Length: 231
Image 1 (cartoon, rainbow, N blue to C red):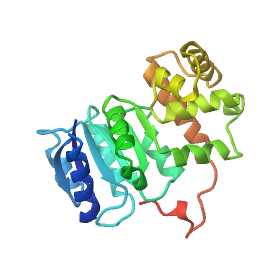
Image 2: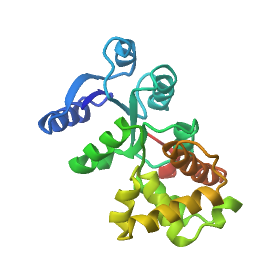
Image 3: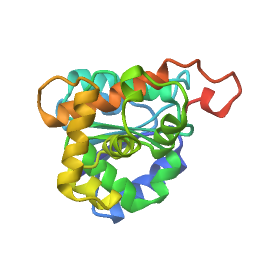
Image 4: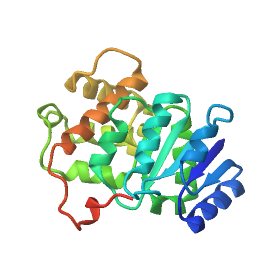
């Protein structure tokens, strides 16, 4: 596994690099801004680029903008965006193209090395990884698209695990279900959300994006609220 890190906090960036290196991950670059990493992607692409959401010069959505550029120009490179706050609207923007190979996690998650490594491997494999806090917010939110309202509680649980990038086998283990039962629930989710017949991985991403988009229709949190300031 090869990763590059862009984060303007030297303490966080270097600490993350040391943590990953000790776990056997090769850190190919670590910079305070995304541009140096973007400039070398053509010649030395890592498996995953880790980006802070807010970096110089504006400290708003530089990480998100850089993620969009990477996904457009280097689709084989995975992208993990780290943020201080969980923001559904930024997640919708990041995942809106309906492709995998991308993740959006809270910075607090990097203290759990096993979870971080698991997420990086899923992203590198072309899967989708969404922070559980965002998923929890979506599960408890009252406003749902009509199609999502038709999902049973078990199907919602399966969709939540899909959002965390788990395969059917991984979902079965997490929810203590038989693999065939999970297959049936996943097929039902696809049918109820009217997912087009295509590659299974692509439909999994589309299902999660549909879920995120439904929550993104609600108004943004008021200024000053934790969810109003991603970064």
